[in-house]
Image (cartoon, rainbow, N blue to C red; front, side, top):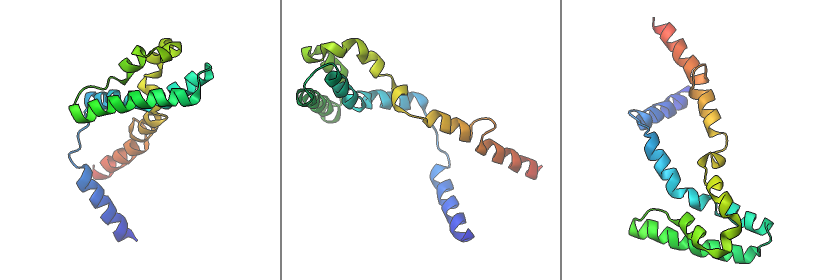
Length: 136
């Protein structure tokens, strides 16, 4: 059992050794995908304001497919939000669109979980401090 645990940890160490995190690159990727992530919220908000669900679905699907094609096939930036803003159908939610595009609305508790585990006084910090005391 312990041998298996050691093997898993060695594999994890091999994968993560030298891992570098680039926050600005992560933010750029989130911004690239964010408009796709909120399409359901847009559709639900439109329906709550009285729009036909099927029509909202069809319009957002067409805009999403076009934006996706441009991003994936042509390497262009994601302009789904621009397409939504330019479509008269979505006029009722335009004032809310910028707020809906805030990434913090869609990451759940991930920041708190990472801080709790990796931050000062977190589980990982305690283990590192323990190892440092043991090595001294």
